[in-house]
Length: 486
Image (cartoon, rainbow, N blue to C red; front, top):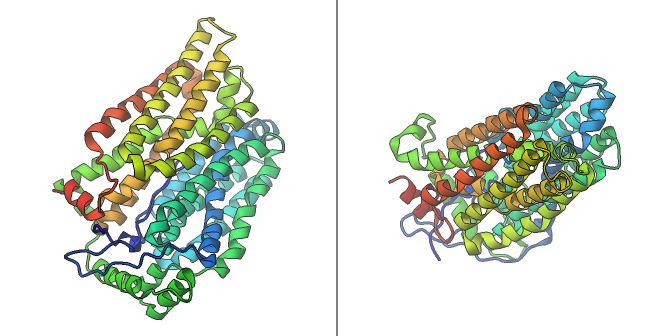
């Protein structure tokens, strides 16, 4: 079996998704043997034990909270603006302030996961998110509403970092892809459910419902084991072997996997993790790829379209309820398809197809608004917006939603992954805030031009991927990182 990095123990590499689903997959230490590192081959234990499945279920409750937070602002927009008498600027600030919370979370999630552990970080995120949902549900004015949304942004950033990290660290390598893909799948279901439920209940009730997954996780986290790799990192050798036994089954042979984890931790302790080193010339290529994909992802319009889908449909003369529900539904099978195709077709083809589809979707939406401005085909333009946003939503879920974070986890060396992940997450969060805050003003200025700009960014993503992004399918992390930092 080919060589593979011990990246699963990297507990300080933050990652964020976007609205979307973002999806940074932390590599675990179950890979094959290194010819030069003395690391043993891992046991190929394909069993999905009851404890492993329970642990994954509890963890993805955080994924559901993330999806609910992302999907909340669109169905709640009209009710909040009417009940609290908010102006467009005030609601734009509310919609975008969550990304300010994710900026704070982006620079602290790795350290918190190291300090509190994976389970402890989930508990902390649950408490923060519950406080955020309650503040929004009982707000009487803009300030408490914004505070709740800010807390929610911070909490979900912790979730989108620690949930895939925890799942990747507890699963054997042959199940890791499937189990980590559940994060994006549950997120898509959550966004769809929030769109649907939000169309039939009040925004305050929707906020209260949003707190339920965090309450469930808060109760369930005490019945699941801590990450063996985190336990090994802090020197609890007996505890991490006990956790491995619980996850793999009492009769499983964990000796080789336990040695792999221990060897990796010894290597990680002597690795440098200096922020200034990230800007050396040897890291220019991976840094360009990592930051470039995040900027293109956000300025391609994903945050704006997800946050304000309902108002976009209504602006075009189409039902906001029907449109947002349809967008959410299409995400579910597409997310499942992406998980199946990722290791078969490769990252690059999926990214280019995804970017091409989002380009087409935004172009159709921009064209429909342009026709409306010139009073042409007025009967057909609402349908054109509907089709365009469905194409965008489906195409985005196929690749651009999660693959940029996966690639980011693969291209940076382990000793630079923490600082690189922090920087990339920070750029992603700031870009997301800029797009989400400015979107309503851009649409008032020129609705057609706004979507043509998004379409242009999506179009530019295709040559960027073709020229700069490496194909990582079927290659060990050592091979990828060596080729990127030569």
